[in-house]
Image (tube, rainbow, N blue to C red; front, side, top):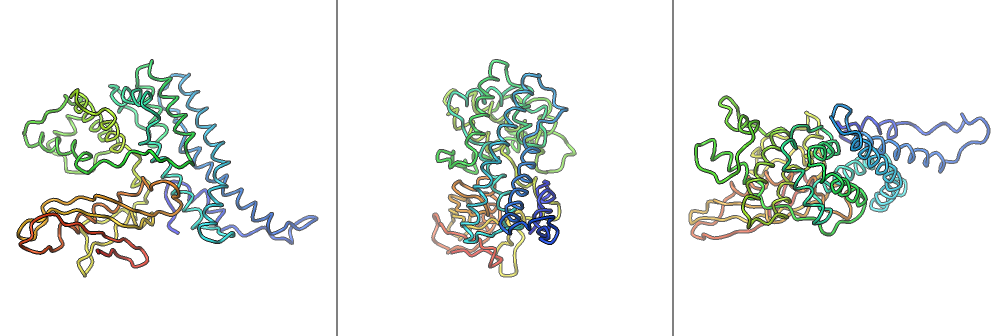
Length: 390
């Protein structure tokens, strides 16, 4: 098991490796094996609950109104208390799926943790309803929405509520309560992941601005403009402050057009700012370039996807010219499997294989003289250590 750096490994390592208490040490009556195993399960539940307490803690150094801090703390307490009733059911599900009523150790711990990460990702893109979405638009567009962004997901949400207009806060807190109440349930109405072109539109606009080309967009904040036009800046993935500012800027730009579908614009914003599971990978597991290939020409399994044990199928659509060269590639469907994620899309992990799949689609050979669209499926299987394109 590759222990994750977020603290769950440290919290639960004791439970995975600690031997059962010696029966000989009992003062009077020796405990039954069932009782000892139940103690291990209780320790596992408590360890995961403590991880959630940290994930949903609101840092003391965030400047919050006292009433908002109290409300956030109560939401977190209620959520963790509910999780303590959910986690035993998750354990039962994992044992049933493995057809092993005694399943314990690293595989079980990993499954519970990945399910927890996925639940947080779902909550970061899920709608609590049209009326509450309007409140979140106010929060996302607030001038100070990107000023304070704690590392933890829940702390960021609360910081954004602080930045939002005061009259929107009751609806925003109601939205958080509703979303937390759905954790552990099957969500049928999750918005589909926007197409790559939608998610990359802000980045393409930034590229045009850097090249001195015109862009129909809202004015940038001084912070974002400084990031975009820094002369000595090397290309790199934006940090969470820049990503927030960039997504906010693009949301403002889209909503300036009265014909824009506000729900769609908010969905793109949410996906562009959702929890990034790359932040939960130890430095030693950071991926190589997506273009890294094996000797047989197939792409290497992306390290982050391997770390989270993501497997499944990527369906790609490729536009090919007469020379058999791909000039436009797109992932049009994904069917991914992740340990512990049951009943919902593995939303936090489902795009981890996209870059490698697209890179392979661009480099592979296609028949000449047959311009048009080609579609194929790539199967990603960690047991084989590679992908298979069919």
